[in-house]
Structure formats: structure tokens, C-alpha cells
Length: 192
Image 1 (cartoon, one colour):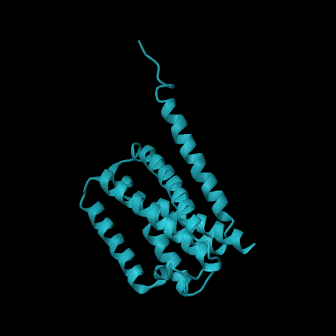
Image 2 (cartoon, rainbow, N blue to C red):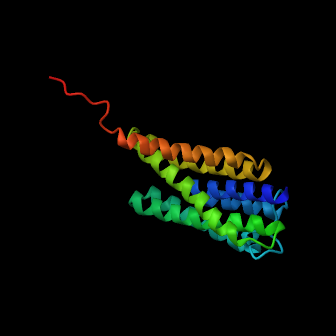
Image 3 (spheres, rainbow, N blue to C red):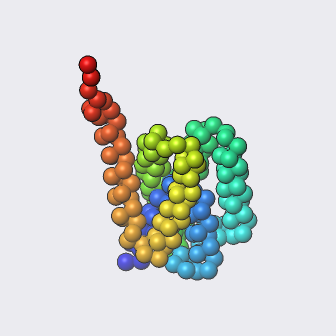
């Protein structure tokens, strides 16, 4: 039973990291250092709850926010953030498995896949949403993403089965976005 809970927690944390990587890593590290739901101490992933790691994640968050505020090209910054999310998601999943088991390496693969699914779904959704919003509303989107990532990370640790719903939702978003791409011109008619 504990292995199932660890898998669900890891999947939820990895999915949250796929949405936005920095705050879920901070939430997981803070909860692990307080031994609430997870504990990386005594595992190869003990660094995930160390102050040095948490400070590095916080600095990376500040750098990304500053780059976004200065108007640096969105595409490369978002791609880099999603790449970091996949890597951090893999580490969080593996670290969660290592908490109660010696077999942690499958968590690297599964965490990367969960984070990649969440990142692809988020990117697809944000591309569609950005096209419909004005510049001021577009500026608030990262705040919503960070907030949803924090909530998912916290709930994944406290209520692990929520990650099944979250991953299903990400798959639904990704499938819906791809279906809409195929219907690009379905509603257009020629008016004469």
C-alpha cells in the first residue's frame, strides 16, 4: 500500500513540476524537511530538502520572472522552463519512491513522463488561451500556472490519489487541443 501512495505522490509532484517547476519543488522540499507526507532524508535525493537546493530553485524562479518581465522571447524561456520541469519532476518522483524503497530509478522515467505530459498539456492550453487574451491578461497567466502547480503539489503529498485525476485532466487537455487543431477551419464559411 505504501508503494502505491509513493507512486501517486510522485506522479502528482512530477505533474505539478510539468506545469511550472519551481514552486512545486519548493513545496516538496519544505514538506519533506518538515517530514509531512514525504521525507528525502537518508536517500540519494536528500538534497531535495536541503537549503542549498531550495535556494537554487528560488534563484531560478526569480531569474525566470525577471526575464519574463523584461520581455525576453517567450518561446525559448518557456521551453527552458518546461525542460527544467521535466527534470525536476523526474527527481521528485524518484525521491518519493526512494523514501520507502531501494528501487527508485523507475521514478526517474515515470516522473519525466508525467512531467512531460503536464508540460505538453499546459503548453497546448496556454497557446490557445494566449491567442484570445489581451496583453494585460496574458501577463497574469504565469501567476495562474504557478498557483495551480502549488495546489497540485501540496494536494499530491497530502491526498495522493488526486494525482490520478490531475494526470487524467492533463491527458484530456492534450487530446482536446490536438483535436481542435484538426478542426481549425471547421467553423468558417465563405460569405458572399
